[in-house]
Length: 338
Length: 203
Image (cartoon, rainbow over all chains, first blue to last red; front, side, top):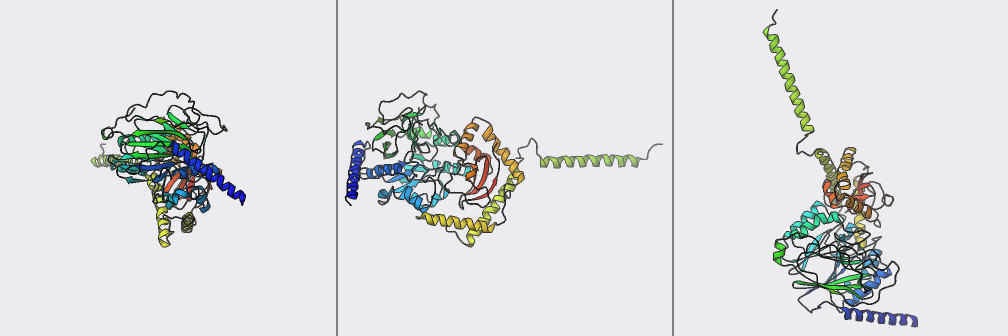
């Protein structure tokens, strides 16, 4: 009994510490109203202690930063998909926020059965791909990148055409730009999607699949993030021509706050440390109405950084110890196509 | 010794008839193989394949209508899994004699191999397409090559590059092309079963 009490005390202390660090590092405006706050997890569904450790930081953060919903980048469920699996890999780790009726909006990864769309807590409404508008002026599109057929492409174009001047935020599993050594950019998918993104002025694209965090240099004016480290990490796999900021030495999730024409973002590790943060300014409507297709930014090697927690080049070798704390790194990507 | 005029008339008639017949024969050939035209030479095979797929979907819908499997949005995964298995069993019951090649017939298999070749062997995207297929595709030993068999939940479904999908005949909702190694599966995503398969589809 005394042992249990001691464990609970230690757990509570650790939890308080985690909240404290996260609160200290919170770089988003965290306005009480008139903004849209949401979170992102990707490749989460392992059900192991790593997922749980990050989930603790993630759910604890809610007290300080009450995100309204969570986007899931796919691979929501590795391995089996029994009732027990759904509990172990989703319902238990995220219970604190599920109990607060925070909605999770899932997209499908290559490890996910298509019938996950029937699972009510994933809010897919029985569809492999869907769109929703949680607040006036902000629209999300969840795509099924495992199976991008003609029907889905036609649906996407129709929905994008009807979305007007809203913020347009895409999320799906496979990154069309990636510096990952294991998977890399899905260029076949890019060939189909990028013309639509440019034509209809997509602002931000969120993906997973790669088990790390990467913020890419804006590609033709669009901001790309890879957030696939909520349950798995592939160390030493990221860094290259597209990398603006990367992190692959620990697990992570992301939080966002859309405030008018600005979108603030922050990536947070399983040690409750900020690994990246910044603000994106939405392209003007004029820019969207007449989309240009400028060249991608010049390719240049990203110099290694001395901040161990914010990786921009190939990071520490597998098996290296967890990084020490690093101050939040801010970045303000440009608003115009590069 | 001049020949009567009717002999010449008969000869001319015969020549004309043969010519007409030859023209008709040539026309018929053209209809079968419209060389140089915009007609898809695979149109007949595609139509046959699509009809077989449509027949399968009708069969499934009929089975569903007779006793609804109740596969709709639910809070409990157990209920989703039960409804899915229920539907799969209804499909099995409705096509007990189904066998490999019922939908991927020998003729359509040749067409599929032909259609799959360009996106995987030609052009700048071929290497990437092949890499994606290899990257996410399960090993053949992980998948049961058996018509009406359940697709194992613990085995990831292959990602199919858009180029590949766009080169193949379109399918109705919830019926999908998937791969296991070099083998092509016709997968019913709703019932989670293998409808048909063809081996060595990829070059």
